[in-house]
Image (tube, rainbow, N blue to C red; front, side, top):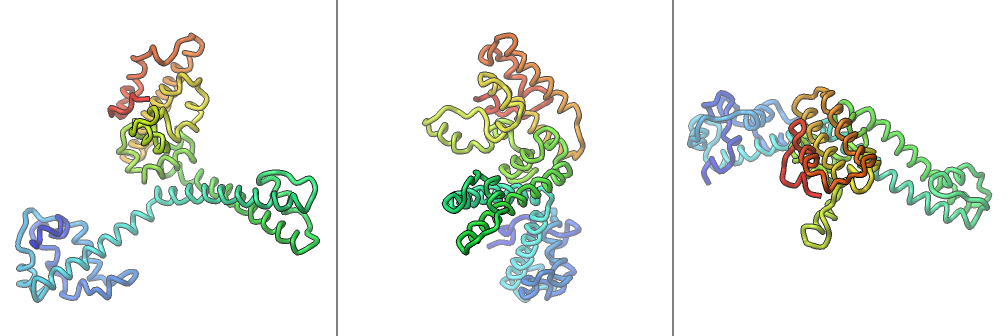
Length: 334
């Protein structure tokens, strides 16, 4: 194994000429240090040089490490290289997990989980309480009514307690929604204004992060959340989906069925541009929102004119062309 096999960062150097190990003490990558939360300063320095440095050209780094006294032999060099790269990778993962968009993803997933469990517990508590009390409501509201009752037996106490858990989880879901509403505008101002905080968070979560969403073509953004339908289409078992999670947006859901394909394309194109503006610039782009409203007004005017999407090839193409929206081949597919 040559040292170049370890990857470009493994041979990195802070000044572009020296190996990553230059000027580091020989105990800089002691394995016992890398297993601690912070490690010592020398280990952190080694990891930083591996992560951030670069070398202009390959070299016989193991031999140079031995010559410099950093390692006794090539095997020890590779052991220390592994320790440094492991530390660098661990720090990169930790940094990524603490990013604001990662916290937004955790929040929206937690909100969905609490809503699902609250509904399941509410359904169970209502069914149970129906055998114990009269005039039991339904859903979470019914669970709240049950939770307000004074139990008169051990069985009633358990049914009421279960209803209380459902109500508590529903309250937690509402608080998570408020948290998302506060976080989302700071993470993705354009995307949040265009999609709303919850849909923006869901798109970021489905894409795996704001950066990943910003790099996706609009055709992919259009069908995020419709993966099952898309796979069925690719296997020849179903038509191509017109939209995924963006169906929940009023611009798509509130448009007549025959125009929803155009509405979904237009919205996906602008959402893609909004995500890119948020990731690369971080500034609000008012023109994006004005363009989307104008485009949706044009699409909805078809209902008044009695025209349909099928005869409007020019407008369908403009969904991707306007403002430089992503122009992947799938963006025009419905």
